[in-house]
Length: 360
Ligand SMILES: *Cc1c(COP(=O)(O)O)cnc(C)c1O
Image (cartoon, rainbow, N blue to C red; front, top):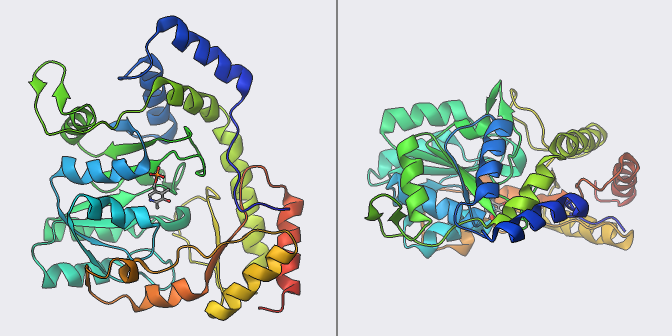
């Protein structure tokens, strides 16, 4: 049996050492020493500043919007449902623009025409889908030209750089998810990387009920903090991340090499490294994608049709500026197994099973 995903398992001996120090101190949450240590180490590891740890990747999105003061976002229909639902939940206004047909990421030109048509849009919300960076250079220009903020849902891009810069340093804010299913995790958790110190400070008060320790209650806030127990898992997992990223990238490249002439794979940003977060492939249509999923299942190989459906069909109350590419991609898309506990041999087995399946 080859599972679609399998969480990184923290080293229990090291974890227990951290847990003992937490119990001795009796400081369990509210910006404790392990929280601060994880913040420092992540900033260092990722090469970013103004990183705020939060309770999960969904609240990271909500807070990024609130801290930047935006409430009307043009977004992608091709992402995990949380990208949209996080903002719908807090009654922000969302509208959809199309994705680029090759990268499956939000298309800057489609976002631009939507903004030209609707001047009340004050932010772009784009996902770096599957760990593949968006066209960050063009979103930068769009942001300057139209005076809109840019928020990236970077839940898939832990450890990804564009050139020699972290992908997280583009835009006004990037959000990460540290859910157990992600490349790096704290069981549940997440982070926001802000461009400005001011927004970071504001969000830090917001996740603590709006309390600024030196000035009292300065915002309407919520509880979005990451606990010491979660930070301990993060610190233990972070020690392994060089290995994890290297192994995942190697598996991803084996897949890509074996499949590139057989089926459609998304086009990657030409200046980015691979973190091997996901292995997406696109078949001709829904029927073939379903067939492949069940053929693989017969051989004990899990795969799943995500991201599907296109989010504009789920949130049909949101304005749609045209989502033809997304509607087409969701029909044939699926993700193959890819996680740290897989071997190179596993990858060959999946590729052979695809070749035998009669779907390509
Ligand atoms: C996982 C994920 C989220 C949600 O993160 P949680 O930590 O589970 O709340 C948001 N966006 C994308 C693209 C994701 O993959």
